[in-house]
Image 1 (tube, rainbow, N blue to C red):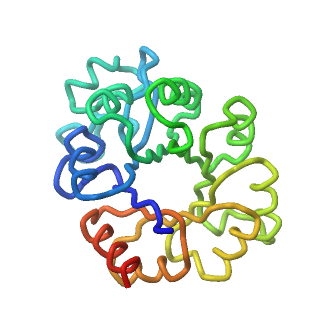
Image 2: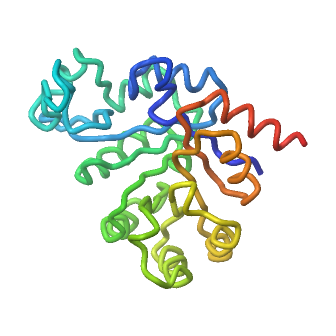
Length: 233
């Protein structure tokens, strides 16, 4: 089966990232999924932005801190709510959400449960213990341990077994940290393998040869075309 193709922060090379136009363009380019980042606004809404604040006119300065601003105020700066994404684009796609503020996890599950298919909703975090706790409360959402290999224990087989036992669906690593044997190891335990920052054709093809289950890329059309060519060959 072809991997899920996630448009990283939408089609961010054509439109401002994590905006409805970027998400719409990502799907229009053929991506099967979207990737975004989520925080809670001051009034408790799930909002989609990578950074802790809205960038100001000078590098390194923030105009608005997300947790101190209302969702309505953030929207005036191009930051959509999760509800806006579903209202504008429906839910016929996989959605991978990087949990920047874990307090937003349960609100995300409730919103997605009412608007989308939770089996196509992937919540990503490096915090394995928080993911374990979330699994107990949300048995039907997809959970992704997203980290770097250097932060994993020495025994990757034990880690794969622990993820499987905890009901964590997926291991997400930088593409350079995967190899065929490691993907096979996680698959043996029923854990999917996702690869992020896969930008170049040669890297996309390498990940496809490893049989990874999901790809994240800024170059959406390139990713989609490479996967289509691979699956047709």
